[in-house]
Length: 195
Image (cartoon, rainbow, N blue to C red; front, side, top):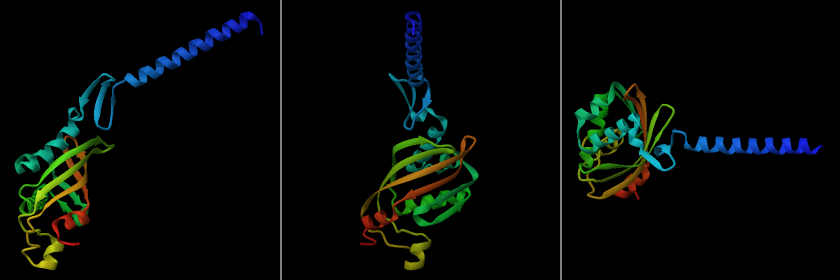
């Protein structure tokens, strides 16, 4: 290979390496949706709640925490579906969903959810939530009523902290379907219902 060809080859190699480095830097600084934050540049982060879907998901949790059922209702479609996986129940319609959630508030009036993480999904939002509350009212549901009668399982006075994942799917700006996964075994053990 002649000296001229070697020089041309080296120049082109350096140019290609330079382009590869520039492309890598450009990719790293592009605006992208990340799991916890919307990243504008490596130096500047914007809270995930800046995304409207995550904002709505957080508002739903805040409405539950505040017993603000009117606000909760405005964030869901009228025909929304709520799957409560921990209790094997599927509830249809926003009014029925609210009644289900009021049942949890009846058993634990101080129950609050705290978001540990929020992520955008292909269809909506995933919230990782920690629920904490004191069982001062009866647990009433299809499983407790069948075993303990219409009054359900009596209050234990114990505090529970249960981790959960709540998957929310959207139809436009409102939640149309959600699946709530939580560890019912851990929940019941903490209340002393089972050992």
